[in-house]
Length: 269
Image (spheres, rainbow, N blue to C red):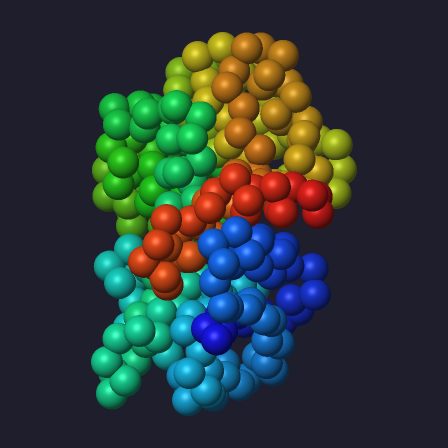
């Protein structure tokens, strides 16, 4: 049996187990997906223990994504983003496992699923935290021109500097930049706890494709207001789905059963 899992603290809320288990069932795989909740100081030992136990792959979530970099050999994208959310143990046993960041693929594949091309587009990312970094690198690597808008301008500027050639500003920059943009990603938690939007409704328009990383609720105020103005809207479950799809395919070398994984995920939202 192949064993895959999730490292985080806490992990009880995670939707990854049913999503991955649905993939194994659909493909008839002898595999299981389990959760691990190590003490924050024991991350290194947890990863070493997983390797010793023959675990095939791990996802990594809060609060371990950045610290995991110190215990794996990150690929180029994970190193640039500064976070790892997927660990692959299939390489040389004498070397550290490989670390990937599939959150970026989650963004890219979400837009592709909705027939949105990114190359040559003007894009705005709201936020400058971990999800925003993954989104910004996904957009920039796909050929979009990216503007970062964040409450703390200094954080936005640091991310823009890392992207090289991007621009940054405070939240006051949103209205003018979104009005001219073709792609928008909300990578903050705004809209999760309250029915509010991080983006002025007046800036939204029909030529915009909007991805909101929030998936609880699925239909956020931002998405409703964007849809009312004729924009293409993409809820956060698509990003969650496709980061899992990317991890599954890296671990197994097989095409993921996307429909089965999506059905299992949305049944729990």
